[in-house]
Image 1 (cartoon, each protein chain N blue to C red):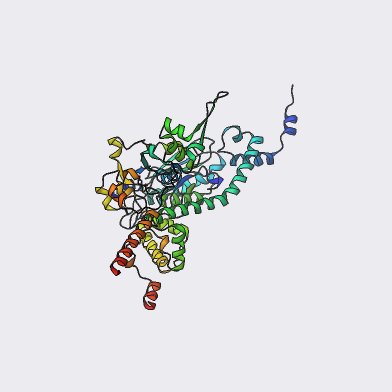
Image 2 (cartoon, each protein chain N blue to C red; image 1 turned 60 degrees about the vertical axis):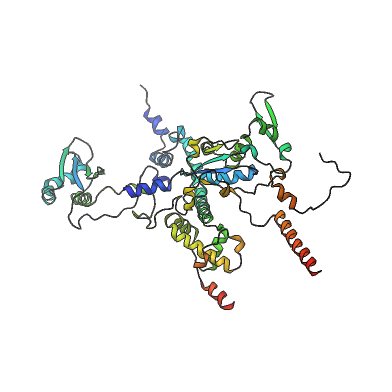
Amino acid sequence: MSNSHLFLKPAFITTPGQNGVGRYVCQLQRVVLKFCKSHGASRGMREFIESDLINFVKNSPEVAVYLKPRRHRSPIIKAEYLNGETQWINASNFTQEEVLKWLFLVKSQASNRTGIRLRKLLHTDHPSIQGPWTPYLFRDPKLNLTTFPNEELSQADVQDETATVKLLKLFQLQKIEDLNEKRAE
Amino acid sequence: MSVLKRVQQWATFARVWHIYDATWQNPFASAELIKKYLMGLYKPIYHPMNDCGDHVIVINSAEIALPGDEWTKRVYFHHTGYPGGATWTLAWELHTKDPKMILYKAVYRGMKGNLQRRHTMQRLHIFPDANVPAHLLGNVSNQIKQLRPIPKRLDHMDPEVVKNSPKIFDYPKDYIVR
Amino acid sequence: MVFTSAVSFVRSKGPDEFWKKRRIFKLSAHFIGRSRNCYSLAIRAVHRALVYATKGRKLRKLDMSDLWVTRITAASAQHGIDYGTFRNGLIQSNILLDRKALSDLAVWEPYSFKALTDVAKRKVLDDGLSSTLKNESNLDEIINRGTLNNCKSS
């Protein structure tokens, strides 16, 4: 994460989903076009409202379009989506065509995907078929019936036999040899 | 999050309770072992910032065995902060004062010194004997293996076995048994 | 009457100064205290932060590989084989998975990881290094090329 990404909203990479496969639900609910009636920065917006807005509204009946004139402020496109997100676009000095292009963009997307920081470059909703590791996965089922503390489970793994065991074995061998010698006599 | 996924997550991050018998164990080597369970280092999901550490109950901490002559040579330093407030306590003195302290300090020093260490130590429960409260013992579902076998004392052995064992050497005639 | 405009004009260093400072303040926007807003403190803090960022790019990679080793060690210890033996066994069996892939497998596909440890164990056994393994009870099920060759020769 670099410095320029500090104030960005963290998100996971997503696919567009199945919207439009069976039926289509427009994810854009509301658009507010804010503009000034006299200022030059709103000229393209005013031209758009005069000529193209009616067509846009006719073609997209599922979107509520509001107009908000205000004096001497720069023009804004504010889009509100079905998932509750809002997107705010500064439309200062936009031409008529540019406004239309931005409106088509906000209409066709499900949320604001600009200004996010991808937490990971890979993401899946189904990360594992076998299921993630749990402490109980390779556990000996015998432990479920044990009462703790258990002396037998507590005993250390001894790889090599101890000197005592070796000595006792030697002693047993010696005993057998002694017996054999006696029998031979 | 679906019900299945939620349960899976509970299972993955479940806190397991372990029990460890410190009888005749080296506390400093045991600390390395206990640390792994306390911090969750034995889990493949380990990350220093995720909360995957387990609880460890240590019993019989009064029965620990220090290596070599460490009972008389190891010194624990403490300073009250006031002038002349320094004290040096030998390991055997500390052990008679509090039989849990040597093991506690060994585990504490075995971990990397960061702020998380205090919280990790909260999950370590040391008992000087085998009397563990039932509400703690009921949580336990795993036993940590000891590091070394417990030697058997001569007076605890079966006299028949002792009698049949080979005699390895004779004491010299002038040897005084204390 | 006081004429301040001439003084202000001399004192202001022009638009370049503003943009230069702004560039620094953008980088110090998340700092605590005066080093966020006071330029002379901010520039020092930003230089320091950029040095840390440069060093951090290398450290991040080291940290990640350390974490992967920790995770693989934990997962392979559960199946009774230590990290070095496990990696060596995999390489000898021509399974060339890196640490990232192995640690991901250990968390997300634990049964596949167990199969990998079994393969590594079998290889280690065939190479005659069985003393490095802890429990080798169910390894007779696994057969690889080395095992077959051993059977033929014996």
